[in-house]
Image 1 (cartoon, rainbow, N blue to C red):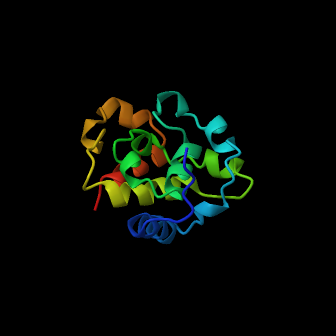
Image 2 (image 1 turned 90 degrees about the vertical axis):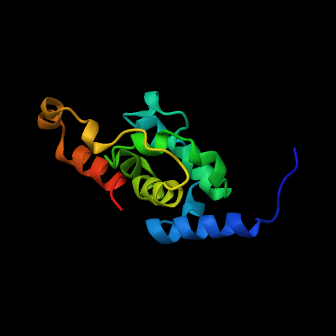
Image 3 (image 1 turned 180 degrees about the horizontal axis):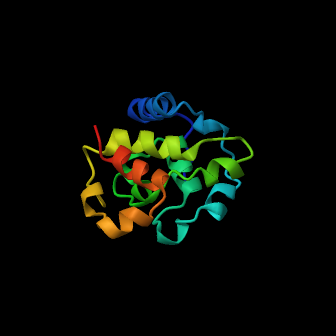
Amino acid sequence: MRIKLKFEENEKKFIDRVNELSGENVYSCYQCGNCSSGCPFVFEMDILPNQIIRLVQMGREEELIGSKALFLCASCFTCQSRCPKGINIANVAEAVRHLIEPKGKDYFGPQEIPAELADELPQQALVAVYRKFSK
């Protein structure tokens, strides 16, 4: 395996843009895995929250495009509360969604929530779904 010592220009732009949009410094994550171990939706995700951060740290935008994990994030902030560095991973996921949305596909939209389920869901979950699909 070859270790890359320098980022390509497009990778650096992607990392910088995620940091700017999220207000977080993804480089401060040291991959402890606390975010993934506390995530209530991790059993449904194709990549774990800490892996999302790692892919962003490496500028791997293309590997994030097909990920359904970005759209499963409920913005419950469990990951942030468990993070020893205080990284708001929900903000990072939202920034990545914003950057890749035109390239990817929607996995779940607000119109697909049945009315009876909408009455039972916490308000934060509904807000998160609408934020993910509004431009």
